[in-house]
Structure formats: structure tokens, C-alpha cells
Image (cartoon, rainbow, N blue to C red; front, side):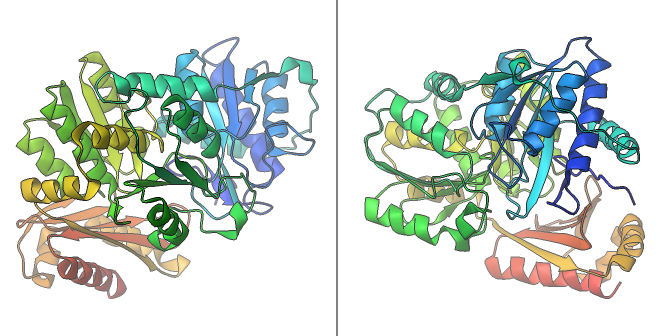
Length: 486
């Protein structure tokens, strides 16, 4: 067991236990080594969400101050956002200003007792696996040594605020193909910021778009997220948002997670528009406008709606392991070919090649607002059109918790799974066992289920999709029984 474990987006842990000042020091030293190996005078940006230990003013003893002190002492120049900064802002700033990378102190949608660190290299995308593996190795080597605390003078730190510029850039890029002129969006909008980092940029966006009637709930950044559920994809946490949407008669409602890289969209009835549905609505809009589109990148855990839409429109479909970092090559291909490439994951991450290589919780809401204004349609109508054109899909996610001592046996079991030893357990013929990330069992009728082991907890995530809600529930139960009795 190592002290520091990098997951898909970096290390996370409970503050005071798996995430302490020493952990942060060791990770910062590893990042400094990585940067200095490529550039004698590297420059990096640092942002943070409002969790315990995060302080954009660099108060003594804060994790932010610890990171800055380590990096500057090693010869790394540091720009620091002077207020709580969402992940997409950090990603945009890295690329816009040609930095060597960026760090974000956040545990994303995890509860407030957690904290974490994300590292994005010079392209602004989440760090690829080979980089996170190197950082994990170096960080654990430093963690095993004595690390001295440092205090760097503040005059060496460059404080920045780029909220307005980020919002202007984002809207300018969307306006090239979507109706976002001032006054076009003459309908109310409601946002749930989850007491995270989203509010200040949403306010800039509404100002630029001249949207007068809007409401941001849970707006103020709070270390404990005001005691509410931080994960917006838990629909039960959106009751307040739905009530405000109904009172405002808003045709769209948006929720973000604390670092504003994930989104949830509700239609005018308060019903969920899944990330995949959002992405295909955007895709159809672009295709109907005759705008050059490359296609969509998604993951093994995302809906078949994406693949069907791309195939139907003669566009590229790229399926990857779970993690937004795997989408960067596809998004960059879109830039190179001067076509719009989209990327989406079922957990609420979306981006596009004209924006950033990191997921952005602002992008889908603005795109849909523009589409609603341009088409005059309701979101529920756009969803209905998707079902008619591509079919209806029912996605289900669950989890299976097990004793930690069973993990090795489960890993071996998943490695050895074949069509032959599973075919007697299901009435429908299996077409493929996909082991890109976990084990995905695909049936000839298009149904599928997926096992993915957590990298940090004794738990397996179980996903399933069919064209019936009841069938999806049943397929999840069948999949969990396979693990239970293996």
C-alpha cells in the first residue's frame, strides 16, 4: 500500500487522514520535478474550491500556501487565482496563456470532508495515465522522507482574476454558430451552484448575455457546502432547484458540482436531460446547421445513444476507458481538422474542441440556451425528437460493496471472464466481452452491462443499459448476482 494513490483525476482523501499537509507537500515536489525536467523556468497556475484547507488568499497553514511555497522554492513560477476557481477556468487559463500546467485543489463532487489535487499539463487536459503514474511514484518517494516546511515571500506570487475573460471567450466561441446575441435569450434561467466555485462565472455569463431574470441558489462558496449534497447527479439533491425553476417558470435549470466541471440539466418540466441527450441535441443542431462535425467521444460507461447518433449521421464515434483525460486526442483531432469534436461522459462531463480539453459545467447550459432561443423549441420536445430518431435508452448505475480481502479474487475473476462462462447465465446471446475498462458485456440486441472496480474503495460500480427501464433494473440485479456468487 502506498500513502498517495492517484485515481482518474488525481489523489483524493479525507482531510486529516489520507489528505494532509505532508501529502500535499509530497505531491507538490513531484509536480515540480516533472515540470523542471521539461523546462528550466516553468510556469503553473493554481486554483481551488472552498473546501477545508483551501484558501486563495494563501493563509498560513493552508494547502494552497503549502503548494505555492514548495513550487516557488523549487524555481516554478506560480499564478494564483485570487478567488475560488472552477476546474474549467484553470484548464482554459493554462492553454490561453501557454503555461506548463495547472493544479486544482478539489475533490470534485465528493463530500466536504474530502479534498484532492488535480494536475493538468500544458494542453489543459486532465493528466494522461503515464503522467499520473510518474507523479504517484515520485510523490510516494517524497512522502517517505522528511519534508521541511517553507515560507515564501508573497511578492513572488502573481495573483490573477480571469472570470470575465473566460466567460467572454466561451460565449464568443459559441456565438460563431449559435444564437447568443444580447437579448436573444429572453427567458429566465435557474442555477444551483452547490456552494462551490460556479457562481462568479455564471454571473459574468448572465451579464454578457444580458439575461436579467436569473436565480443562482446555494451561491455562496462554503467549506461544508452548506450541509447539502455536493453531487448534482444525485437527482434527489435538486428539489430546491426544481422548486425555484417552477416558481421562475424557467425553460432550463442547471446544476454544477463544487468545482463546476460537471453539470446536470433539467427541462422545463423539471425532468432530467442526461449528458448523452444534451450532447446529441447539440450534435443534431450542428448537423442541421451544416456545421462541420467530427463526431463524439464517449466512454464504455455511456449510453448507446451516442454511438447510434454518430452512426446515423455518418460521423466518427470514439469509445474510451472512463476518464475525461482519454478524450483529449479526439478533441485535438477536431481542432486539427477544423471540425467540431464533442466529448461526453455519463457522470456529467462535456466539452468541445472549440473550448477546452477538460470537462466544463458551463458549456452545456449555454449551448442549450442558444439552441432553445434559435429553434423556439422546448427541451422536452428536443428530447422526444431524439427518442423518435435514435430510440429510447434506459441507463442504470448501482454499486456492489465487498470485503477488502476479496479484491484480488475479484480482479482475477474479471480478468478471466469469457463469453463461454457467462452465456448460460443470460437468455440473450452475448456479442462481445469488452475489457477496455473493467468488464463490459455486450449483447446482440444492443443491451449491455459493465463492472468497474474502484481504485480506492472495496466497491465495484455496476452499469447497465437496455431499451426498457424494467429490463435495465433486472440486468443490474443479474450482473450483481454474478459478483456475489463468483
